[in-house]
Amino acid sequence: MTNRQGAKEAKRREERKERKREEGFRKSFFMGYVLGIDGGGSKTVCVLMDGERRVLGCGYGGASNYQCVGVNAARDAIVSAIFMAVSGGLKFTGKITISAICLGLAGVGRPHDFEVVKSIVKYLESCDLLPISWELQENNIVICNDALVALVGGVGDDVGIVVAAGTGSIVFGRNHQGVTKRVGGWGYILGDEGGAYKIAVAGMQAAMKSYDGREISTRLIEDFKQYLSLESIENLLEIVYRHGWGVKDVAALAPIVDNAAASGDEVANNIISDAVQDLVDATFTVVKAIFNTSDAFEIVTTGSVWLGKSKIRERFTQAILKNLSSVKIILPKSEPAYGAALLALKKLS
Image 1: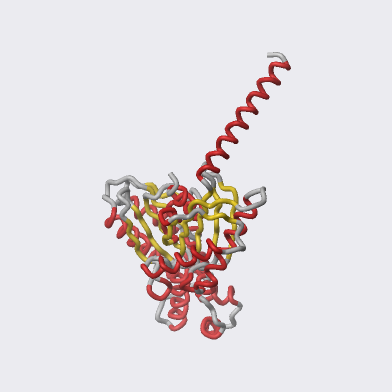
Image 2: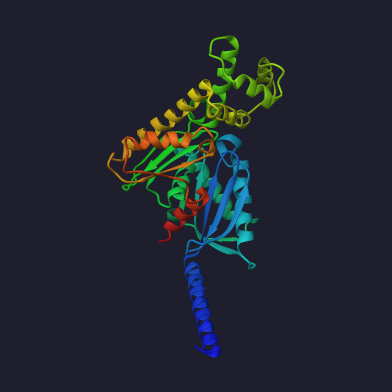
């Protein structure tokens, strides 16, 4: 092939690529754009997606669990995340058309919650701050718990199980018939077994019991003292009770327990084993409710607890596969906000 022929062929390839890009743009323009929102107790993430599943923009806001921060604060966090996603995602001026939206929010599950979020959507549609032309109908608005969008983002589908273990914990599953089952997610007082908060509390309780002589010797006493710069483990009371520590402050101590367990501390290891068993029991409860033991599906693990050094994820995996050999336990394929956008896009198909 001569240089001239090579240049012509290269030009033809570039023209074909350009036609494909234009076709993709026309398709996404025809379908409109969608927004996927993942809102939790610490932050809100919004993804702007087109009809080809391409992420065009991503935005962030504060907490949007209205049970914790209130409706107005949750609404403002969602507005901020949407504004950032839309303003940063597109390079042209004017309003963008949004044809579907999915809001996967923590704290949403009861009928009253859905009414609250519907009121937030109404506010979004009338918000002058957002450069959006809304084309929303009742059938292209998805309101759900953040566990569902974590599942869809994690496995790339809406069938499977998500085991979320961060500050708190929740296990959520959906089968091919659309039947769902949720276990946990009841907050740090009523539930959240296997989450970082409960692990940290169990670690502090064990340290105090050991100090009393009610528990065998554990390095947790010295580890807490060193990490918190305490002269005595008794000073832990002042920090926990008088300094106004919240759930996240306490949960941040979970790695101390995890590290002690990884180093061979028996007391810490027992705490981690109990946390693993709680997550295993919750997962099997979901499986028994909506799947057959012979079904093939994926279980995705999400959250900071799984990143520990004491092989929490490996222990969990071994326990699950011992009785469910046909399932796969995977790491998240995408973020929950991406899963929310996929659910919104599905409404336009």
